[in-house]
Each structure stands twice: as structure tokens, then as C-alpha cells.
Length: 92
Image (cartoon, rainbow, N blue to C red; front, side, top):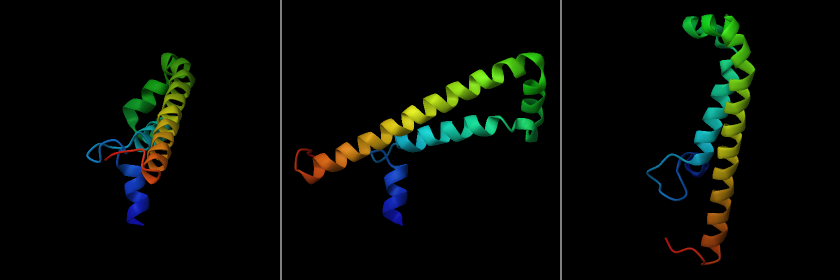
């Protein structure tokens, strides 16, 4: 279980940094949950206003796209680093 948690939370480049896959996933989830912002009063009021209703789909799309790309980048980097380490191509 610890290996799975470490895999998703620590950066493959620097263990002290948060992984790009976790950062991307959090941005993706936050963008999705923003659609249900009525639980936070000031956000709910903004997104029910005319400007908020126009910006809502745009901001959600941008957040989900950017979050998805960062998450996939982080997972791709982890996989390539594991392959390089297992073949002796990566010096740590």
C-alpha cells in the first residue's frame, strides 16, 4: 500500500516535490467539483450570475484539460523513469 501511495504522491525527479500526476488529478477534480459550487456561498453566487454562467463551461473545460494533461505527463514520466532505472540507463 505504501508503494502505491508513494508512487502517486512523490515526484519521480525529486521525492521532496509533489508528483505531477497528483497535481494534475487535483486540478482535474477541482475543475469538476467547481460545477457543484453551490455548497460554497460566494462561489455559488458568482456562478449563478450572468458572467459566471458564461465563464463556467470555459473555466471547467480549461481546468479539466490542463489537469488531465499534467496528470498524464506525470504518469508518463514515472513510467519512463522506472523503465530507465530497471535497464540501468538512469543514474540516481
